[in-house]
Image (cartoon, rainbow, N blue to C red; front, side, top):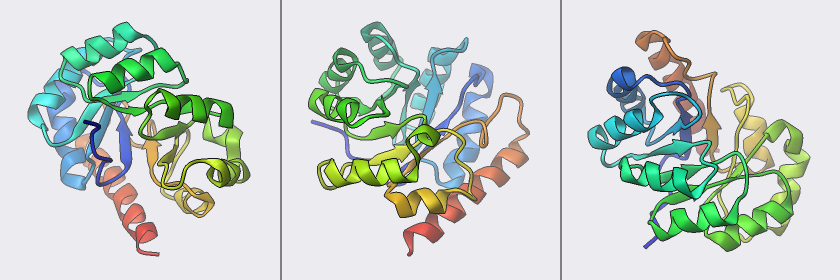
Length: 206
């Protein structure tokens, strides 16, 4: 059975999250309202951080980013992860994650990639790099994608530029270094997280 879409479709991208900080960082984000936490695999300690977050927040959608191979999928799943995020579209990787019951949000930048990802079992599409696609490109995507397909721009998303993307058809976002960087003070992380959530709630009410 596929997982349901995250209730709040804002994905916190926690690149470089040290395993020892995972629970404390997760607590701040969870309290702010984040329910999707991604730890990219291209930094040390990612699987350990995913395991810690998965155990502490079983009702959140926790998983890996920069998942490029089937081996990555299986390692994240073994660590308790239920979310696949990638920068690219590899049907075999998406299909394996879907088989394991993971929520799949692969990266796409063209309609060809978007439809290949959906055919492989993707639940949402990460529009990456979103600046390359642009607002006009996202509108064009939405004119041909199946109705209701979640599309999440990723790359340089700030509270100030979310409105433009939402008007272009974004249904969620992946948020990286503008939210979390290794060593950020928890109070600052809380301030940033709350700013994103407040903007999302404002846009969702329109």
